[in-house]
Length: 464
Image 1: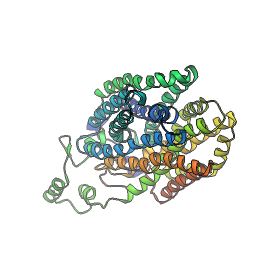
Image 2 (image 1 turned 90 degrees about the horizontal axis):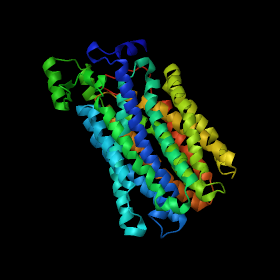
Image 3 (image 1 turned 90 degrees about the vertical axis):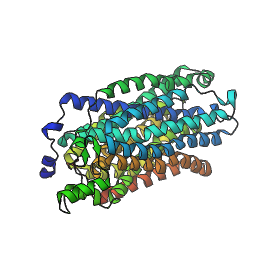
Image 4 (image 1 turned 135 degrees about the horizontal axis):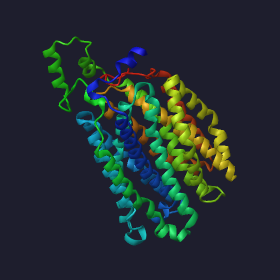
């Protein structure tokens, strides 16, 4: 372990000072906060009002399913964005891509707030909503991956888990901001006010955050790991044929750094990362999206209770996220993954019993526990572990794809499947069962994965 840590120390030409690290940390945190604020604004709107605004001519149950499906289509665009911007980030650098993604997300989110409702333009309203959701997803598909890669590659080796967790803290901050805005709207506006104009305010306000995030990234330096890569010449990565030519000309042995980077068979690290992603992504879709709408629609509690619970859970997450990052630096990534996923499995049915009890304190406690153990804790680990699993030559692309494919399979499909199963069974137990299945997938993946703590991120090849 010591050898790998020493190997990862930066050369003088690519060292970054405290101010550089701070700027990278704030940039990664803010961009990720904006992404999750945008998506949480949408997911809460989909759960609370979009079925009435954009799908008013169907039953409440079908309207909820339609709104959740519209929420899910963004994940298809995220996959396209992951491929496009991920390859760009591995080729020309991380920071250039992060300019583009923040603009796409901010502009599309703002325009959602300006859309006419179904009553004004008919079927064109949900069509435009889906179109903007696709643009939003295209930019978001690489935003969190880029921020994750950049921050992990900036971080000091011995504190990589803690520093990288700031990306997860960005997700928490965005969730908190979006949930807080919705909690205020639900508390102070009547139903008519909320449906006529109130729902637009959070989307329109995101424009200010976009401008600040773009300004902040103007002064950001490129990742030191990207600049140290042996396959990068004049700020651009060589393609495979060019690398092979360099290997042949230099007489590099078969086991050399360039040969290892371009000749390694890919796949193992990617599927392990996908499995690690599955639990967090699936649990997030259920807890932060579906349960908010399920509670508001099916339980005899105040309409602001689920959004208040997300706010309280997100506040607690400011302790949970860095604590998990610190523990990962101390005890390793695998041990924390196994502990958190096992705990989620054990707590899944008791937590759902609390949430569906009809008691406001029970709903609050269940949502807070579910969010912190099954979502935020896993996200803190995911931010550093997935970056460490991949080699620097394809890290951005593979990490983005693992996140987005996991999002499509779990976060996007999960709420729709949960809505369908709970409607068919007239019960809450499918939600708990889905939490168990998602978490077990991540548990098994953690068992099979290598320990990555302290790995040299300049290495071109994957960890397995």
